[in-house]
Length: 87
Image (cartoon, rainbow, N blue to C red; front, side, top):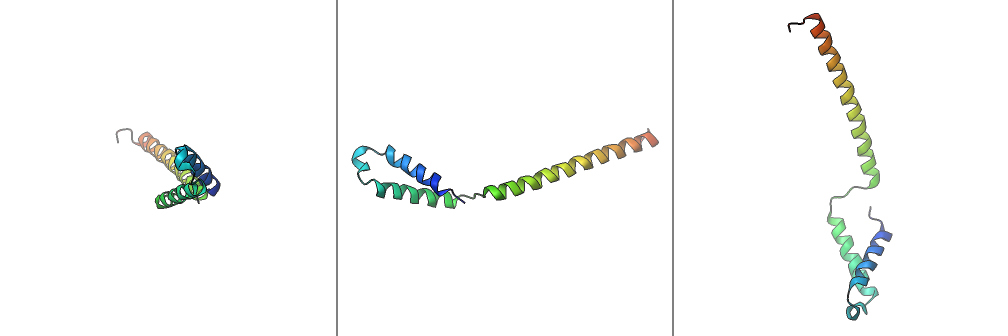
């Protein structure tokens, strides 16, 4: 999920970038930024770090299996070529 402390930090930075006369609303402005950021980020199709790491592990295992199969096919092709060089 979204790290709330990072969201607060970003909302504070955005609020500090607003011109001083508008900044007098302070906390309210920061809450509005935070709410807008949460809504916007919530609409994105994001995955958690845990989900990402699980998929990364699956991809790594799949890659290892593919490489093993490629080696097997190469060995079989070499063996077939050795038995019948004209094939």
